[in-house]
Length: 130
Image (tube, rainbow, N blue to C red; front, side, top):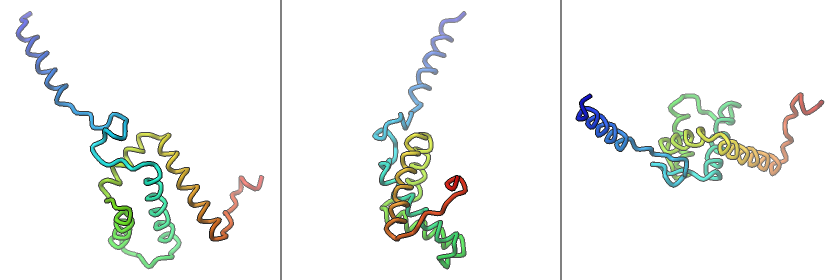
């Protein structure tokens, strides 16, 4: 076999591997975007959840999708971020189920806290009565 072909193959393979850049090695500091800490992400998700809940129970006059999108954008702006960074974080935490669960636990804790503050009793589920 011709060693020049093998050498060329190794060189091309080496350059190909060097050209592949892994943007996220599992550490928050290595991502190509700002990774929210869990509390910050939970705060954003809480606010988006409240907007969605208000929309679903008709507490808001928002009917059109464009107006609804604008409200979501305003929530993100209030947190000094945008939809691109939010979506990148959604993907980041989505690939880390344990961390995402911790974020959702923070959201649920805040919902319970807000409910308690307002004197609203939690809705009982059928499983709770047994």
